[in-house]
Image 1 (cartoon, rainbow, N blue to C red):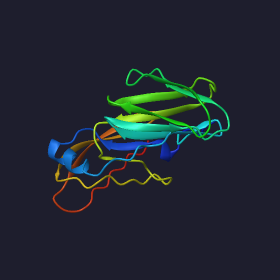
Image 2 (image 1 turned 180 degrees about the vertical axis):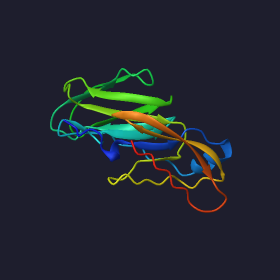
Image 3 (image 1 turned 30 degrees about the vertical axis):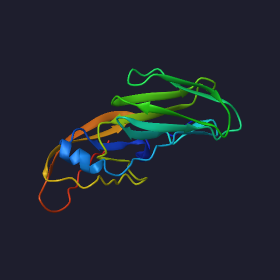
Image 4 (image 1 turned 90 degrees about the vertical axis):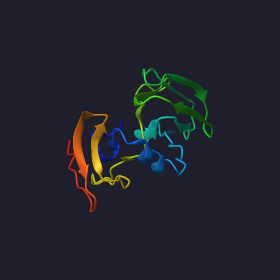
Amino acid sequence: MPVRGRAGDAVVYIAKLPAHVESTLARVPEPHPLLAQKDEAFVPRVVVVTRGGIVDFPNRDPIFHNVFSLSPTRRFDLGKYRQGHSKSVRFDRTGVVKVYCDIHAEMEAFVLVVANRAYALPRADGSYELPDLPPGRYELRAWHPDLPEITRNVEVPDHGDVRVDVSF
């Protein structure tokens, strides 16, 4: 059973970026996040991907798994597959996708599909760092599968860093 409420399960992100900022962040290819099946659990419990991105689902257990989702954001069923095999899913709509294993009812994970690459996964101590953003006003969101989402308006100045506490 996964531990609930961990800082590492959160995602901090900017809801919307101007097109020129988004294109600057998108210049570097985004690796496919992995949502592995290991020890009859999903590892990690939460992954984040930008709209249009792909998540890989490798099976690292010596047993079969069947990864699926009934979420309106992205429905899929990967069928049964064995250790050493991996399947992939593209996510074209933003939102939360709950992921399960048809064989092991206790397995649950989340894919958060965001609109752009201005996001961060907090470290174990809760600290996080977003990519550099140009001056302007942004809507920052902190999402966690076990807690209510937090929204903050953030003003990025011409110079210096911005600190935003998004304690749940």
